[in-house]
Amino acid sequence: MIRTRFSPSPTGMLHLGNVRAALFSALFAKKSDGHFILRIEDTDAARSELKYAEILQEDLKWLGIHWQEGPGIEGPNGPYWQSKRADIYAKYYLELEERNLAYPCFCSDQELALNRKIQLSRGQPPRYPGTCRNLTLEQIEAKIAEGKKPALRFLVPLKKAINFEDTVKGPQHFNSDDIGDFIIRRAEGTASFMFCNAIDDALMKVTHVLRGEDHLANTPRQLMILDALQLHTPQYGHLSLITGDDGTPLSKRHGSFSLHDLHEQGYLARAVLNYLARLSHTYDSQKLLCFSDLAKNFHLEKISKASARFDKAQLLHWQKEAVMAQDKDASWEWLGKDIKKAIPESLRDLFVEAIVPNICFPKEANEWVDILFGNQLQFNDAQLAILKEAGEPFFIAVLKSVEAHGADLKRVLEDLKTELHVSGKKLFMPVRVALTGQEHGPELLQVVGLLGKEKMQLRFDYALDLVRKNNADDL
Image (cartoon, rainbow, N blue to C red; front, side):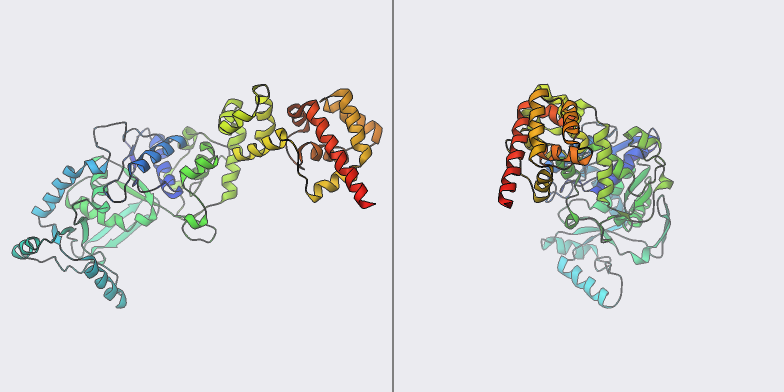
């Protein structure tokens, strides 16, 4: 069975790079009738927070990513919180030490930083020089007696070729001599990412790991650990990083790109889902697809090796597609509680029909609430020019027709055509501007249905007063 996983650290909000790795892993598992596992990597006690673990779970569920094993869905390979797996890691630490494949290291951060500086000055790759590799038992006991707490380093074998087939990037080749002995247990006793991540993948029988290419250098280290312990190794695939317009990795300086923020801003899950699924992966269909259809058409070989550029215009395209695909009830819920309070129940469906096709986010609907149900409109110079060009006779005729026909816009417009001999833009634009203070927006028939006769009269009266005042000022 295909088994994939997503293993976030609960140290902050999920950014789009992490979410894409989770999505691709979940799509591949779904396509293969496999299992998708969520594992919380919270061994860094100083930075991990329960609130972030809870938020990331909520965000994944909102996006439509559901796990078959993980928090809340216990399986045979748990626990799924790394902080609860210390005894498991201890067993493998002991095995490595007994076989002389790991050793205690007492080097301080300052000593390690100095070594790195010297190596870089000599044009050498920075790696651990093996300072503590050959300490005797007596030397180790003496340092511990002094109160020093050692980290545990993995003993990297010499002159070993580490080769593997990356499911995204193709054949990869590393040499162990380029990799220094690395820490697998920190001095305070917690497992390093390098170690627990590899152990958990093996014990949870993960078959495929899809993660960012910033982890590519970790893979040979993890393969050496698993080989030394004779544990199952997954197939690794490393996704290109998502970049901003400037070609640098997407970060806060490019904007707010956590999944939680997008949700808060009013992006629809289906929009984000369709956008992310196409970041580095090609789909033949350009239609808005559900999770199952995205999974059905997901192929590892269609993942691009090239960097994926974040394109806000494309995200907005999918947002608009998702907004238009909602039914009335879903749109009403999406608009939010403020809209629900502001719109009379009798006008609910008409408001949704009129406004939703003209917006991408709920906050834009709030603007239309102010426009349609507020008291007085504000006009800019261009809009005032439109009203002035229409002139006093236009608005006198409009008011006369509204008095006779109420909110029957078709009859009002017919009266204007007949009496004033105007049509097209010269007919519709002054009406639209006078009623909404906007040059674009919902269908006018829907606008007058929301305004009603009395408000129409008030707004045409106000437009007439403005025209008269401007004409007087011109004298």
